[in-house]
Length: 511
Image (cartoon, rainbow, N blue to C red; front, side):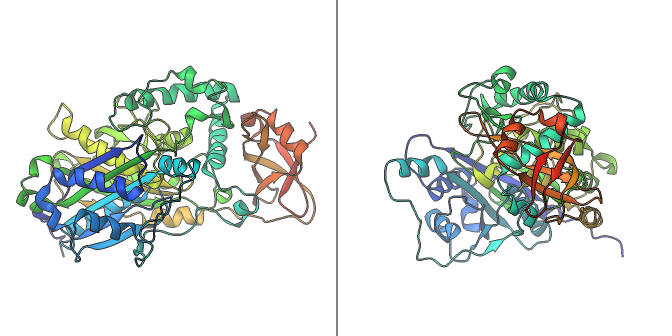
């Protein structure tokens, strides 16, 4: 049978968004979500009573078991509204939009509100003042959870406490530095040049946490107030998690937008796609690349039909927001999507997580809201395309969305990455937990994290054994950590360490 033509009335659109930032008052994530939700609904007031579902992005500060139910009550949404919260992951806002678009196109959903917030500044201020933690409404039944709840690490990473993003992403970065043939200082300078344009965008964004322009040297040069956190990253290269920020989106069918009189505000969903990289970082064939972003991107563009039935590609995109928790995430996305690091279109519409702010799992909601605003306010051709990417864990879970100022000629389509996902999953390298006898191994990735005094405090390594298996390793003793602190990380990759017998520990090989 020939495919059924899409119903134009069911074309999914983003018709309203709201963002918020709080620097002074003590607030809760729900307080902030109310602000963002009310701001979004103020632009589409007739849709408030038409909302079918309220989705809340996972809140890191875990205030209460039912933030979606609390938010629904404070926004005056009826009891018929489905309430849910997501699992952990910066990919979840875009995943929620993709899922909603699929259901709207199928006629199974009409209007949904997606919201999220973090109030980490307020939480820290309460603790500093000796005030009780805000626990939300504890007497409510937990909201149901949606999304992929599988962890982003395996037993090997757990065994060496390789669990924090600020310790994992530098592993990727040093792989990229080694591949580029740069030493640590040269690569750090290159990262300053990469990220400086992000600060220029943040400086002009009304909801950015750090609305100030920084030069490449100010970002890359280690100073007392810009210390090296984890080689090669300075503090100004890392996502900032201490903000109070919120964002919300109203997604509905074109028919509902017309009924509510907000069709002129519509940004159209052309396509969406998701994919997942090998979950255990130690099992990835190449820690410096993301086959999943490449697969999701290829599927995203193949699913979107442009003028005259031609599939669109990355060159057709006018504006983009690439997830930017750390510079390695930006570089890996650019390589996977075929975008130059100095692309004239810019890589962000917010300023990125280190400068705009990184409100937990909800950053991408801000990215989508800002992208939609940029498309509506932009000049040039009638059809302007925008790309948003989100990722969760350690460049692990990915969701991409393609947005436009005009309806998709072929209707909304969600990319199928099933075959590519099977290939990615099958590429996982076997990981060894320990060895019975000591063995020389080749360094695949390495970094050093530093304390506030600048001294080396930890030195994780990913290494390849002679039989091809991988190990995630921690330094055998303090002397090794100290020696690693004086070692050029990119230069160490491809070199050797001696894996100790028993626990996953190592010492430096004789040079």
